[in-house]
Image 1: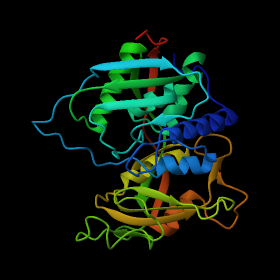
Image 2: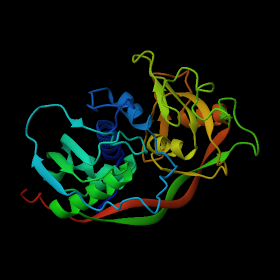
Image 3: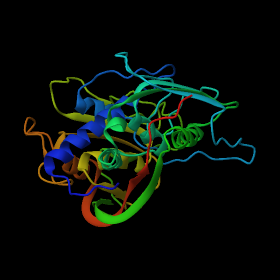
Length: 331
């Protein structure tokens, strides 16, 4: 059921914006408590998505950690109401998690939202999979309530949602890795960082003394400052982050997979200011928003402010192929 034709520029742009909007619905404020998505503009919805950009630090499993494969009980119902979407913990791509002691409740979300969470997909992977879904799967919204004994981690929740999707929707996905057009993120000058990128102080593990100026995002997370929504300039920053966290947003912004080839493995503080970009002809062919001619493009800002560069290259691109999906079985 893979795509049978190449997407044109309009289809790609629409699909990517839809994917960004979907990811925004599934991303949440990093405050503790219940998480209810809000309706924001697409640019700023994307910001909320990448404010929780992908955390490269995986959770450490210990021998005593309980193995979670599936929920003990779960209900799946189609949602035909106009009520706002709701999730009781962040569906973001990073490790930000509000422990729920094995309880999951989500309502009013499209099926793609659950798939994106379970498989930790970026926006480009969402676009590619959306083109393969049948109409009902692309449009229907579902409520899922599930519970398991114990204290699963966020990655455990992902695995159990995968199992649930396979059981109730008969979902069968397989990763397909091809060689395609990518961007390599590299140092502009060996051994030298830009003025807006600095190594995080080792004696400040909680970011008490060293925090990106103007950003209140938690230590280890990327955030966005939008002082005036009418001004289309993005202010992005974070404290004690690894560069792989930026890749998730860079991939969405550039329209191609971005790979970290800097060789930098430490934790950093950074800020970045740039104009939103739009696609011209094909994915990867982007331009600055014409309404902000004085602001740099994302790639120019990365170079001038962070001392990094985005170099066109060939590299591995991972997408998912849909082999099978059905309407959900009854509870």
